[in-house]
Structure formats: C-alpha cells, structure tokens
Image 1 (tube, each protein chain N blue to C red):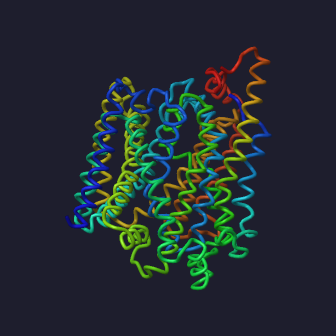
Image 2 (image 1 turned 180 degrees about the vertical axis):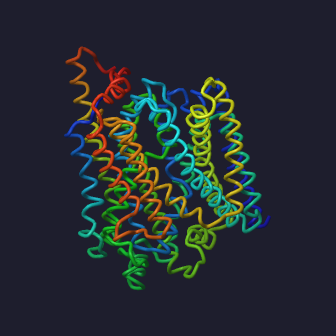
Image 3 (image 1 turned 120 degrees about the vertical axis):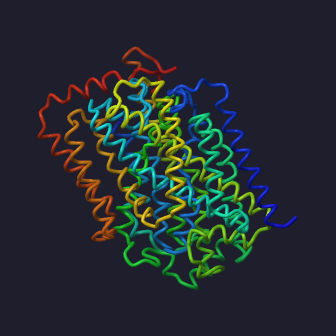
Length: 491
Length: 77
C-alpha cells in the first residue's frame, strides 16, 4: 500500500469517527432552539473546557502560529503572549454574562444586547456585524482544511472536493446535533491535537538538532535577530506588541461564538474554573512555534509560511503519522467551523431577520429557519473559499479588530448602569470605522500601534462621554436587565 | 449583578504586567533558560503562572461570594 493511500485512509477514518460522535451526541436530546444553541445550559467543567478549547484553537492557531514563527520570527511571541490573557479577561466577564443569560434565557450575543439595552436596532446592528466578521473566519477554516488535506494526502485529495466533503459533514452534524455534537467532536479533536503538538514539537527539534536547546543555539548562530521583535518585519516592535496583546486579550471573548459557548455552562462558577485552567492548553502552542522556527533552517524558502508545519511533518515522519496529523488538522478546522456556522445562522435569523423583517416568528420557527440557514451559510463560505480571494485575509484582520469593538458595550453593559443604546452605538461606530479605515487602507500598525486598539480607545472614550451626557433615566433599562440577575446558586 | 472585587482584579493584573506591559525588559535572547531564548522562556512560564494567579483570584472570589451569601441568609450548595 502506498504512503499516500495509508495517509488518506487514516484521515478518512478520523473524520468519519468524528462525524459519528457528532451525530451520536445529539441522539437523545430533543433539538429545540435552547438545546440546539446552548445545549440546555447543562455543560459541566469538562464539556465547557472541551468546547472552548475546540473553538479557540482553530487552524488559524494550528497553521498560523507556526507560519508566523517561520515568516515573521519574534513578533510571533504576541500569540504566546495573548493566549493566557484572554482567559484572565474571561474570568471577569463571562460569569456575569452567564448570569444575565440565565435570567433572560439568552442564547446569543444579539440576545444580550437586546436584553441589556432594550433596543432591537442595536441588537440587529451588532448581530449583522457579528455575521459579517464570522464569514471570513469561516472561510479561513475552509481554506486551512483544504491545505491540510492536500498536503497530508500527498496531493491525492484536491483542495476543493476535500472542502466540499468535509463541510458537507460539518453542516450535517450541526443540523442534527447542534452545540452538543460540536462539544463531543471537540473532545476527539483536542486529544489528537494535544498528542500531535507535543509529539511533533519535541520530536522535530530532537531529530534535526539533538534537542530544543541545540535547535535554538543553531537558530541564534544563523540569525539572532529573527528571535526578537521586530524579527523579519519592519514595524512589529514593542508598542505594536503591547497594543496587539491588549486588543486581543480584551476582544477575544467578544466573538459571538464564544459568548454563545459560555451560555452552555451550567453555572458561572464553571466558567470561572474553566478560565483558571485554560492557559495550560496553550503550552502546546509554544511547541508549534518551535516547529515553525526549526523550519527556517531545515526548509528555507517555502512559498507560504502556513505550510511550514505540515511540510516539516511530511519531511520527517512516515506516511501514517502524516495521516494522523492530517486527521487532527481536519477536525481542527471542522470543530470551530461548525460553531461558527451555528452561531452565524442563529444570529442572522434570531437577532437580525426576526426583529427587522418578521417580528411575529415563534422560537420554533426560528429554530427551523436557522437550521436551513446553516446550509445557506455553509454554501456561502464554500463559495468564498473556492474563489479564494486574498482580500478576505484583510477582512479577517478587520474581524478581529471589529469584534473587540463590542467590548465597551458588553462590559459597561454589565457593570455600568449609566450606559445606554445611543452611547454604545456611537462608540461602536467610531471603533469599527477607525479600525476599518486604518486596516483597509493598509495603515496598520499606525504610529507603531495596532489599528484595532486605536479604534477601541476611541470607542471607550466616546461611549463614556456620551453616557455621561445622556439623561440619567436610561438607567431604568439597565435596572430591569441586571437587577436580581443573581438567581441561580453558586453563580 | 455581582461585580468582581477589587482584590480579585489585582490578581488578574499580574499576568498583564508579566506578559504584556514589561515586554521591553524581557524581549531578549540572553540569558537562555533551559536552552530557550529568554523571551520564549518568559512567555512560556507565564502560561504556567497565569493559572496560579487566577486560582488565587478564584479562591478570593468564591470566599467573598460565600461570605456575602451568608450575610444574606443563603448558602452556596
């Protein structure tokens, strides 16, 4: 049996096994909107941990981190730097968000904005922006998946059929099992990815250099400047590091899919404990970076840095192992993609379509339409991925900077009763506007700072100022939304 | 709505100081620790130190919440 066939069989086995788990997980649950979107709010520490790890560690982290280490060098430290800090921020935001969610039976980020600010317009704007930011992220998972399948099958599976088949599977189990299916598949994915990362990250430096320390000695001899900021770049220095880490740390859990994910927890305490342990998972990330760095010496001149990890694996290990990595990589694209699809579909129907176009829809009608939308959104993402326009990469950067602009609306929403719809709307527009202008005109980093961070500063300032200037009676809305939100034990 | 206490926020500030604001102090190759350049070693160790800090914040927060509940005549199961 040829190497590529072995790799292919192993990939197919892992993907089908994942799909089987995904379908099976939803079997014993009646899939109404509540069960489909937030798993009936019954996930304990382990399922929440699996779901979060499954959502957070995407192909962007899997291929992108090693890719950045390869092409940019020192600035990749930013990925290592922001990882633990996103959980620090989540510790102070998600449990409170969960409390409000529990009280008002919220399922999405759009629901939160409606409950807190009492404004359907704000709900619709935030949700539509959320869907727009999610689409390029979804497209990136698809493209990553295509790359993984192509490299891991030695070119036997071309990119486009691979994307269509695996996304068919994703859409199917999202349709059937909802968020519960995703959490279970995530378990398989996390297990495989952890094993793969630890094994590759240690084996590759040993194989070529005789150890991680010796690998770094060789890297320092070759080019010491690659290992500190700004590395191979011109302008990614220390002020860029601080502003980018801050923006990502504050903005990360503002991605609509993580807000939805946090509503699956059975208590606020689950989310707090999850925030304590999550950074440990990121240890595997530093090993991925080492592989990307080692590739600068072993495989110089790759056309695309994102290929560095897989190319190193293909060069170093037998075909069956490449199959395992390929399978793990495929699930790493499929798990976050399924959450993204589910979130985008629910946001679009429940928080944009219903308030704007069909206010009379019932929840069960929303659930039915959202499931159909799953298929539509999958098709749109496939369409973008197959056309594969590079401008989507800049849209993704805009997505990261954009979701962070929800931060003042969410955090002031939770902690400051004076804030109301108009200030949040003004701040959000300014933040998204500034970030979009700087990013799309290629002015990022601007004056050495992350463009999204500058947008966030303006956003904060405007939200605070406008809140202080607006009449105090708006606090009544906040009182209604937040008062006695502490209804559940140990929240 | 239960706001996080000032004390638990102080615990959360420690990782931000260690891994973010102090970048110009630790972004260098020497001294190497365990074979790693200093910057890579520093950030990797914050992946271990951050859970410690947040465990502190967690203990602080749960103690405070249970004390608060007792004064209100409720208890955490």
